[in-house]
Image 1 (cartoon, one colour):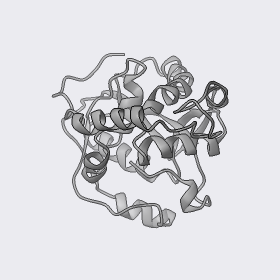
Image 2: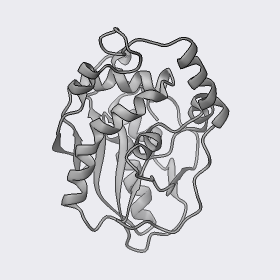
Image 3: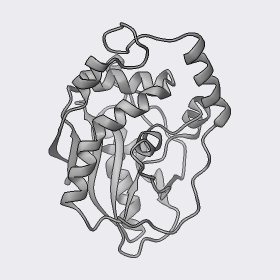
Length: 231
């Protein structure tokens, strides 16, 4: 897989990540699934989320997701993102590795991995970008191809149509792709509205989306408390 030539992404908030490491050391938290020591994710629960992969479809694109139980993946993703428990990036990377390998076998012509851009408010609050951090644990660099054109509202309480309207025209490519092929990577796919908008922006720049990779696929009927905070 080659990469497009582009400027490097903004460096994540280093102070925020250092502070979280200190907090994790002084006030260690138990396993996010079984609530027993050690902190982060214990070996038994890690085995529950590090499984194989499965293929489905979203927005007319092939979607490859972890085959781990969605409710367990959501609990880990939510703790990782909403509680800034960055130590969970490594087990999440292991859970995603099978899907990434399968996508590369199926689409060997892909030029880069691309992650839909997070809101600036989320980046400032966390001090890191969740999906790029997970990918970095696998030695994969997400290309900063997309950027936000406007601020959107929180999607968790919106219907399918409202989500698509909320994201319509929200992304744009930083540069033209001239026929380049990318693989989209996100944490949780619900209605596919983020995927659809990212695909629109990539195609508008002359690129093509080969497929989508995600940690979990969750139907919209899950309650708000069950769904991880969107990027």
